[in-house]
Image 1 (cartoon, rainbow, N blue to C red):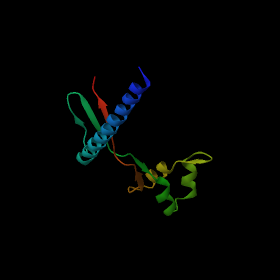
Image 2 (image 1 turned 135 degrees about the vertical axis):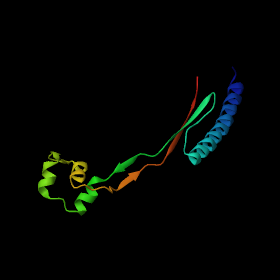
Image 3 (image 1 turned 90 degrees about the vertical axis):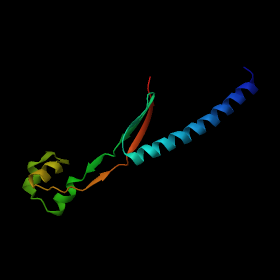
Image 4 (image 1 turned 90 degrees about the horizontal axis):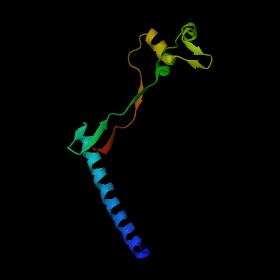
Length: 109
């Protein structure tokens, strides 16, 4: 293959990749709107809800959990089991953060 042929091939690859990236973004946007996995005979766009991360420490500190309870649920000197403390105190509304939903595309074989 000559250098000009390789250059032309790489230019074609770049152009097609840009088109495919745009198509992928459009598909992911539509699947995110639907909030469900979408399948065809030869491809799958998998929807995943964002994961939640609870902040158990927040409510127990606000409630001033008794030191004795904190000590009972302390697993390691530097690690406190805030989830167990919340459970013992029967705290139901635990604050949390949630990551954004995602979509992944996969070609079926």
